[in-house]
Structures are given as C-alpha cells and as structure tokens.
Amino acid sequence: MDIGRCWLTPKRELFIKRVYEIVNELKIPLIDERVYDKVNFNAGAAIATVIFRFEEDESVIRGFLGLAEYFHTVVIKRKDEFFIPHASILFRLISA
Image (tube, rainbow, N blue to C red; front, top):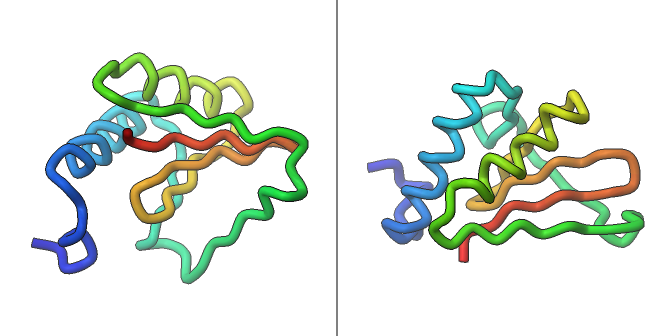
C-alpha cells in the first residue's frame, strides 16, 4: 500500500482510480505528485471557480475531463482533487 494514500477512503481511491482510467482512455495529459515538487493555485485571481462534485455518476468525471480536451490543456492532481486551469477560470473535480 502506498503510504501517501493511507488516508484515502475506499470510495475516494476508487474515484481517483477511475479518473486515471478515463484520462488514459482519452489520452489527456495529467500532472500529479510524481512529476511536480509543489503546486499552488491562486483561486483569488480567478474570475470563476467551477466545482464538479462526483458522487456516483461517471458522467461528472467525463464532463470535467471533456473540458481539458476542449481547451487542449492538462489536468493537475493535488491530493485527492483534480484541477483544470484555463485563462481566468479554475475547474475543480472533487469526490463527495
């Protein structure tokens, strides 16, 4: 078991695993803790922050990742959340 994931509930682990599977399927670039040393977002500078909340409907994940495809940008993972920064909008995917 990965020591960094000990604090995740089984539901959140399943959420993260499913996001990774769909990211690979859609061939969307994803930046996670294995790649970067530190990541910060300045949500105060964003004109809007849009939050996608995953409960059980996979279409929420696909809709969120579809934005990365549409804007030709990357998805950034921080802890158990995913972000898509675009211009002055920050899209965020979380598990309920």
